[in-house]
Image (tube, rainbow over all chains, first blue to last red):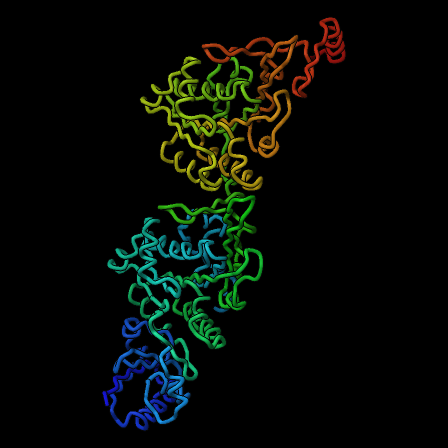
Length: 102
Length: 509
């Protein structure tokens, strides 16, 4: 299994930031079996990084690896959508259907 | 302390956008947000970029936030207006926040979000270049990037508030679907900003007419209604402020020669220096000759003259002038004459006004002749034409230039033209040239109908045209009804009786 390279852009220490981080950690632990690198970036502290990546919304999750590049925005409370964005193979068949390339 | 603040009027910043500051009575309210709404192609992006560019040219740095076109496209497109955005970026006077959508990246929405990153980027850019001006283009494009509209709505409101809090003056653009309809597409944009302006690009009589209207300036004054504007290369938006132009018009008592001694005499000693004279007549009555004499009169006095010719080609004009004994080519060599000659239909009236104003600023003439206004009449709508004439006359007077315009009447005998009904009140003097049919012969008559601020000859004089130009003759003493277009010969005995009667009634005359 290839290693996931993930970056999560958040704005400060808000409730939404906390929710997104805990949602992401839970999903990663469960689905990626620890095979991931997660970097959390606060746009208030590093606005130039947000500029480089042309980020508008927070939280924004970027999956740099494995390719293709994917972006998921929001507090990541919708687990199925997050999995769709991460393109994680799961046993649930309907996720596979929805996750098929357009 | 707070009581004193209440009475502080809203301060305005001069935008530097040509004449916009006049209709905005000083410029945009400082530290406020202004919405610029308009249909596709109404010039929103140009206005927004110009707001930033004019600031930078005046030493005020700015930030441009783009949601629609990419920064690369904007840099390229704006070069034609003379704005080198890339150079300003490298000089640290301008920063882009490129929030244009990237079609290659698929974005999945999974839960609640905010536009915190965008706000952080804008704030960062403002800090980086010490910006005092921010332009956001356009709000509608933000909505199309996200599916959750209610979040976008509240986030945009938050960003507008944040812009005010960091002390910048901002313009935000928004699309609308109709030139006369809801202010903006999503129905919320106008509530985000303090002030609202509308740009229109209306199809009127098969020609496009751009106007700008300030709908609302919270807490301060502005000119009301729509003002025409045009967009020119190397200049951008140029507003044509009609009402404001009247304010500073001067008036002098200095007389100058019309180029014809007899005509000067009829005008009570010549034309006033900063006056505009209308010469009206049917085709072939001698309008172009009057113009030629007027130019020659200036040139022989060492003045510079500008001729705006819309009816005849350059060669024709030169040939005509030679026929009357005037050498246009020599005058041009001496730098005393410049001829601007073109088909009236090549551009709209607003553009003509801007072109003419630029020619006047460049050549700095003492005299301007336009032959003829009637040729321009059909380029735009009646309203646009009237605005053109107002704009031109007030500009000429403001620059203390003597103007002479011609207008062609539709009928050979007497009559008036639409041109005249529109502009007779705007000109200071009116000279009528008319055909007079007498005993099977066409004679030419001239009268000074109006001469603001001066006595003038009230007679209708006969004149002839020969190699030396216009030769003034005797008044038509025994003819009436010339101006009505139906001259009636009056027998000398009848005339004697009427005159005798008049003299008896008023012995002091």
